[in-house]
Image 1 (cartoon, rainbow over the protein chains, first blue to last red):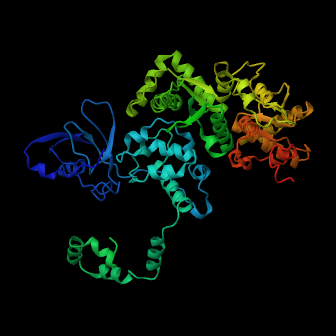
Image 2 (spheres, rainbow over the protein chains, first blue to last red):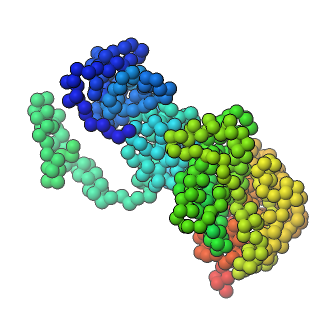
Image 3 (cartoon, rainbow over the protein chains, first blue to last red):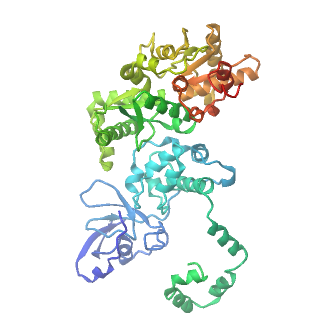
Length: 244
Length: 310
């Protein structure tokens, strides 16, 4: 599923679709995303919503369509409603997240297996890949981890938004997105050279170069903050402005 | 000639020397092993539960992917490629062979497994054969070709061929006669080494008991090594990463506990083939992976590092 553009303009049309939210029927305008449709129906989403732009991965959801036995999954902020959809919203995906010290590990399959031994339970059913809203080949990178191919795993999983849908669907109960994070950390730390600009930026931060700017943002009122945000210029960054 | 090759997890992590020497040997003998671009766990260990199809998705997916690989190899190399997938690890070989036979025979099993492959536009049609590299060496290349390719005969090596369980069992997955196999011995002979005849060629190494019942593995390995030594072997060849690990690890334990004086080096058959065929550089062999360092033994026989030893 690729990111769909906002289709709110079409909501002016009188046409409506029938959807079911947690079992109850609602008629909502066509063209709304799942998230907007639920809000239109009167639900207030306090967990399971974030950036509303398909980047944060907080709004993962599962649904079914009329006359279709399959269970579908998507990001609610990116997927338009269809007639006959059966919906709910997931507030959170529970997944184990062990603590490790990256400095004490080696970039190997065994480092992954030490913290995520369940990776070896992978059945290669590919349910994770099927469900991924980012079109990531999840099973392949889990298998790559098992074979110690961390570079491949890091690259394949790079677009992960950590929505957790893979983890919900996995019959082997692997928390794929946390495994991918460990693979990327190991790859980043041990296999690729540290970029110079990173060292420079970290030093700038440690030296308090941006402290003043942050303090200013913390004190100005909401109206001014909004104004600053909407009129911000990304090109300013090169001149040493704040990082967005 | 090219072959679609399925490596398996161990060959990528702790038995890299097995894989790299095998590929080098395959190229030298003009029967190149080409790794499948995408593959997953072989599905080990094969489940004895006949209705657990979930556990059979992994092997069937590999077979379907291998079939695709064969097609692509055929298109890119413009030669006929056997509808085969070649393995090195005896566990992978066994798992893939058993499941392949099962789904070929029982299409009622294959169909629901194929439903799981639909999303990837894959379908296994039951048209592949699983072969161990030893079978390719015996049936496609032939011992004579191997013998003719030898540059440095393995003089002084007295080798006990160890098949372990998985190369010969179960019946459906065997690569040779279950009671009197000859493939490894024939290769040893072709390489110019002495064949040691011993009855322990498939005496279990202790397998996965290494995880929870190491004592049991220790007894098995003690018996095995003593038997090989009694018959005057000075080295053992294997085709299984787990056999290699158990045989090496427990020898070290036995020496530590004073139950054994000296150890026998353990080799993958491909390492010795590479050595005899004069394949370099030495880093391909990954002798550093071995817990029992085989280098002093090879140096003593003048098979490696001649330049350094005067």
